[in-house]
Length: 414
Image 1 (spheres, rainbow, N blue to C red):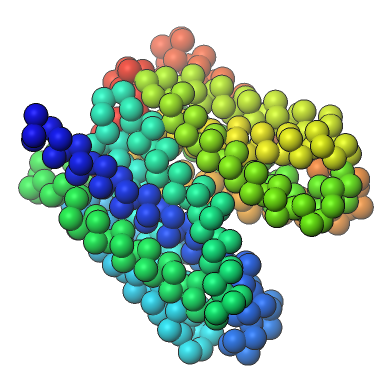
Image 2 (cartoon, rainbow, N blue to C red; image 1 turned 30 degrees about the vertical axis):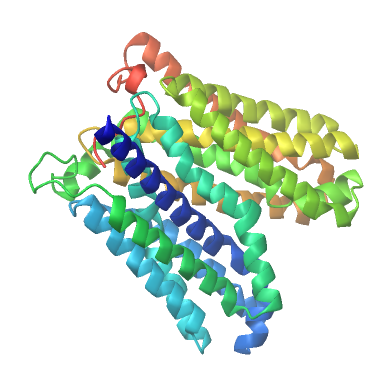
C-alpha cells in the first residue's frame, strides 16, 4: 500500500512538472506579440523587426521540431527531455539577458529548436505512466498547460513586460522552465537500458518508411485542417466581434478570458471523452467544431449570440486536442510516437499559418467581416469528412486497430 501511494505521488509530481513546463512553453510562444512595442523600444529596432522574434520562434518550431525529434529519438527519454528543457532554459536566459536584437533572436531560435521535442516527450511519457484507460486524460494534462498559458501566462507576462521591463517576460519563462527541469529530474522514470525495445530503436529511416500509414496521415491532416478552421476566426476575433457584431472594444479582453476558460473546459472534457474511445471522441469533437462554426456564421452580426458561440468555439476546438494527439500516438507502433506527435505539432502550426493567410485575404477583399466563418467552414468540413473516413476504415477492417479501443491511447513507448 505504501509503495502504491509513493508511486502515485511520484506520478502526480511528474505531471505537475509537465504542466509547468507546458505552461512555460505556451507563455513563451505567445507573449512576444503583447510586448512588441516594448521590445522594439528597448532594442532600438522597428516594431516590424521586433515581430521577427515571433517568426523566428514559430518557424523554428514548425521546421526543426520533427527533424530534431527524429534524430534524437534514440536518446533515452529522461536524458532527452531533461537536456531539451535545459537548452530551453538556456535560450530563455539568453533572450532575457540579451543586450542586442541578435542575441534575443538567437535565444528564440534555441528555444524553438526544442519546443516540439519537449512537448512530445511530455505527452508520450504522460500516456505511458497513466492509469490504464486514462491515457487521453494524461495527454490532456499537457495541452492543459498550453491552454492555461493562454488564459493566465500570457497576460501575466505582458503585465510584467509592460510594467517592469520587456526582459521580465523572458525571466518568467526561465523560472518556470527551471522549476519544470528540477521536478522532471526528480520524478521522471529512469531510462531503460539500451536495446530494451524502444520503438525508435530502428534507424531514422525506419520511422520515415512508416509515415505513410493512412491512419497516421489522416489524423495529422485532421489536426491541420481543424486548426485552420477554428483559428481563421480566432486570429481575427477582435475585428470580427467589434466590426462584424458591434461588440464594444473594451469588452474584448473579458471575452477572450471567457474564451480561454472555454478552452480549458474543452481540453479537460475532451480528455475524458477520449479515454478508451479515441476514434469516437475525435469524430465527435471535430464534428462539433464544424457545427459551432456553422452556427457562428448564422448568428454573426448579433452581439450576444456571437460572443456566446465564440466561447463555445474555444470549448469545441480544444476538446479535439486529446483525441487527435492520442490517435496519432496510438497509431505510431513500430515507428515512434515522438516523431508522429512532432509532425502533428508541425501540422497544427501549418494550420495556424494558413488560417492567418486566408483570414487576411478575406479581410483585405472588403467582404463583410461578419461572414468570416464562411471560409472556415471549408477546412472544417474536410476535417470532419476525413475523421469519418477513419470510422469507415475501422468498420470495414481496412484500418489498423491499435491494440483495441480500450487502450487506444497508450503509445508504443515514451
